[in-house]
Length: 327
Image (cartoon, rainbow, N blue to C red; front, top):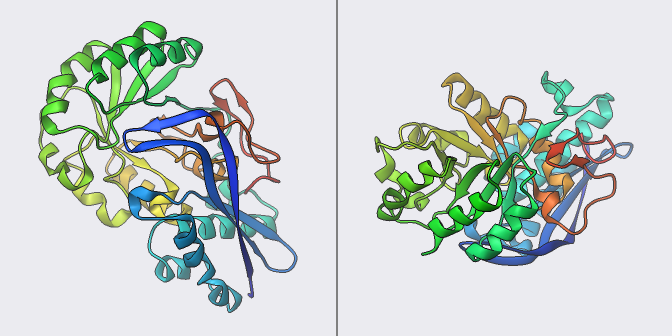
């Protein structure tokens, strides 16, 4: 089957400024892939990420390099070998899933045999800021059942204390984005437990996380930057209590499903996460969310604008993506 491919750059304004330990952004720049068999069309979105040496232009080139192969019959299975895991493969893979669903007249989760991902509760992220600013933001979002705090700085404990004051009833996750040393983590962990933090995401740099092996700890640890594909999964099992599956890291839904199934076989809980992007990026990730311990697909909530036919949110409750968006 011959498939044509187009790729465009889209820019979405962030609602304010989104800041983590590695920097801040006021816009989400994404690449949108469209594939077509001449009758049906499928779409996918990816967010090139500097942490993994990706840029808009480098990822665009990767995507366009497969135009000829798609035109001569490259399918999702072949795609896994044609491109390494990352943003480019993610956008093409998700677009091919969407095309497959459109051709079959079914939703993607029906093709897989999963339940409809409807009425899911997502975390809401508070970006890195001063304790006082984070307390104000927490108070504004105290109605949400789960808040995730971006940390990594000398005032991190004060930030968590401030958010707890602002949102006394919300469950809290903290995410250091590799910004702590082991000593930092060990020093702050008892206080985080006392404040009711339910999980700590990627406290140590991915290249140094062997120090977590067998480490005595109270709060569950989540692998994010350390977790990419099924090939590296085995090394994480004695370092972390949960893995964060993101499609821009796995290189699409196809590999993400494989990683999810490996985790399920080990009774390893999963978190389904995202990089800040539009509803088109969240939709395929929602397929993985049934049965996930933590869902963190709040990308559209962090934007000041979104796609046409977006995912509907009622507070932190996500509805299944409409078919004219994806899948």
